[in-house]
Image 1 (spheres, rainbow, N blue to C red):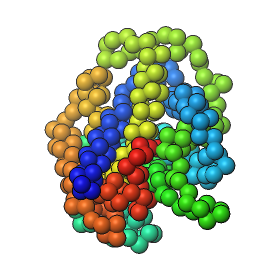
Image 2 (spheres, rainbow, N blue to C red; image 1 turned 120 degrees about the horizontal axis):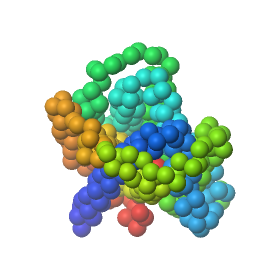
Image 3 (cartoon, one colour; image 1 turned 90 degrees about the vertical axis):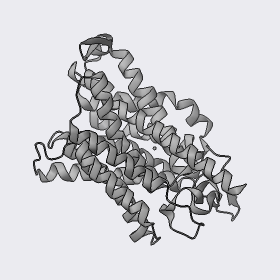
Amino acid sequence: MQASSGFQGRSAGLGLALVSAFAFGGSGVAAKPLIEAGLDPLHVVWLRVAGAAVIMLPVAWRHRNLVRERPALLAGFGLFAVAGVQAFYFASISRIPVGVALLVEYLAPALVLGWVRFVQRRPVTRAAAVGVVLAVGGLACVVEVWSGLKFDLLGLLLALGAACCQVGYFVLSDHGGQDGRDGGGKHAEPPHPVGVIAYGLIVGAAVLTVVARPWGMDWSLLGGSAGMNGNEVPAWLLLGWIVLLATVLAYVTGVVSVRLLSPQVAGVVACLEAVIATGLAWVLLGEHLSAPQLIGGFVVLTGAFIAQSAAPKPPSGPVASGVGTGAAAGVAEGELSGDRTPH
């Protein structure tokens, strides 16, 4: 019975991770027409996060106890998982090719494995490591990293900053599910994941407001339309796509998947975001895939499958061996238990 429950948890976690990757992958397809219509990239990022934060305000009010109980977690989540990833990424692509920035950013799964192995001193399985290597290698083909590579040190460091913030996303998502003891020694429930998301978006919006300075944005552009592969699409519709699907849905399903899987396995699946983004750009923006990109996409999928399908171990076993330690063993490994539902 426990094995069946663990299998169902892993299957659900993988499905949610794919939904999250698909939702995140669509953000660029919806944002690019807005940027080409005249909006500054940072203003698009601010609209995305601030809009999602407004939508999540009722959730934040419902879980207002988190401000008192987990202030450090909320601040770190908003700073790293929300504002940090996007701010560093947009800064990096102003100096280096987008493909290079994506590749460096998606070194995050490998960095998560390094965190687990060398900081937490917990063993990881060979299959998970092979999956990460395949995913990163395939991603290099998807983004065609050999095209226009320029070794701008600051640009590469900024992209690495985005990767480190990605690590913060997976580690904080996993940490947020841990049980513990409160100040009086009583059993403390893990913070509600959707509440963490809500406050993370609020903190991220506040940070990005300082960086993006939206008061200088041309708001009239949102009342017009943007071109998408020869078709005119209302700007408000694209903005709704970015806020509702590419942010709210993406973050919620992403954190749930981290809890049901594990940070490093979910990180490997998240690499599919680049594959999905490229595929959507092919269909909706007319940006065609080359043969190396198709091969790279297959390699990424293969790496994600290998890492996800590694045999589960008991809680004392390798953390990257699968997701059984989360769904089947509850919070023993700091992940979501079965009755809870997650960047």
